[in-house]
Image 1 (tube, one colour):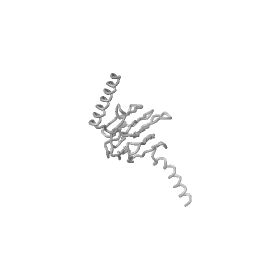
Image 2: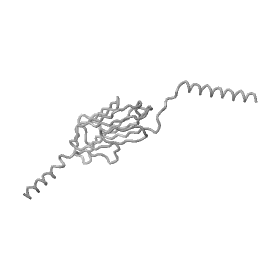
Image 3: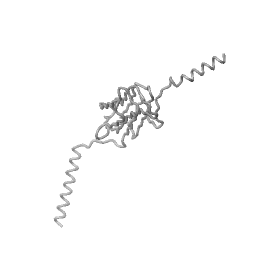
Image 4: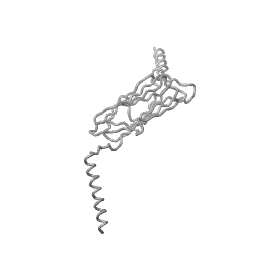
Length: 188
């Protein structure tokens, strides 16, 4: 009986690595998949994952919500590394209405949202970051890497719209002040 129990435990321990996920998440990650983050205060988020041979295909979702009553923005950059390894069918990253497709043949590709490098969120708006990737195939190289990471930051201040009538009054007042100063200098 003890022999049978010992053999069962040995088989279970031998097969455990086959059943375990090969995904390695960075200990510095500040966000997890399927999490909704509130952008009401300035904050940075980071997610970094290394994938092992045979991992995937899979989809990860990250939700960003502007809990403020003002328009907000989010800086966002990502990087996909396929070094002696690749994601079959590549990687597709979507954030709001923005889409990036990284082919399996591309060894490394980074991206950002646009030339201004930020996404705009209306008050109360939620946008979802979706990362879709195919099965990971690694080459015979010892340090083959299949990695996806992103960083995002909500800035410390939100852009407040300037009312045009108030700006016009300020402009007229400053021009009148300059005119009065010029007149005063001519009189002296």
